[in-house]
Image (cartoon, rainbow, N blue to C red):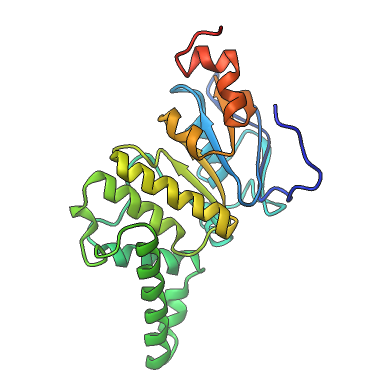
Length: 265
């Protein structure tokens, strides 16, 4: 178990003793988790462990039956997903959520307007020169993010025409088009090639190191999680089974037996 360093930054996202019930089933049971700026935390566990339910609670899609969620120190347990997005939280989903009938660039422009608190409506109230400046700034930012994500040249392609791996990268680009404070990635490497997976790891690493974004990553590719994460939390039957560095998690006999397919020595 990693120790707490009093000199480390305060958590940007914190879940305290979260519980969620589905009828008589406890999907989450007394789960606590914190994320600090610049940290990449992997969240692993078998199907049914509660990973997506925890993501839903953190992002505001589901309200917990017990516990609290705090974003930048503010209790957001009862706040909507939109409120959280406009205060620096972004999320991707297991199923692709791109706007298929928009171009790749337009997907990123729309994200900036939503995350910015309704900027598109505000722009409609401006004069024509201000509207043109507003549009140029967002399209310039979209082009910048696409280059950083290895998607240069795809801005005019309709999202529905993208193969799975490229679509996954566009989802990541859209999530960071307006720089986030917290990024929740739900199986971002699913359906990607080895090269696309490396590109994804590189982008996520730059986000955390250069922009101080806190990343929580759910991914069934354990090798990918081990490579990119600075810390890993393991869920089992809705409870935290283990927490530590990738090396500590790999050496934990319970995790090795249950999830990594290696018997304890």
